[in-house]
Length: 212
Picture (cartoon, rainbow, N blue to C red):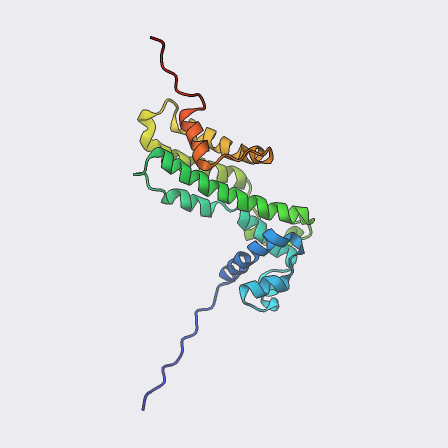
């Protein structure tokens, strides 16, 4: 007689893991609907009951604040920058970095824009009830920018000897070009990552032969 093998239950999620799972399911819906998204829609996307959403988050505003915090979280893009091989040519490294950063900025802008456009403001009604992990620590923006800048410097550093400017300065210019790209796009011009990197490394003047 074959003995039945007892089924193992999947390990229970910690409260932090459950919150992260719900936020991951909610982000695409928040980007599409803003604050108009319902907790029922989010629960269905996460494959859980609506009551589980409210056990993880005090109310819908707290969940929306967590979504905004996750959209602004630089950890994902920093991991992508760290994964770029330093063995590739500088132009290729910077193109990959531009693509990763533009995707991060695009997601952040979409989520925050959707929430603001539908009347949600971070922590508007939560006050002291906002979960500590959903609050940005003091100086979070500056810390994020500094970490991003340092990651770019590491990508540029192997070519220091071939550059007219220090890698630190080039990284700053590169970030400035990426952050102003949204203004370019609004004017009908949307340079590709390859074009941005080409202008950064080679300028915009045609090569001219020296007079004989």
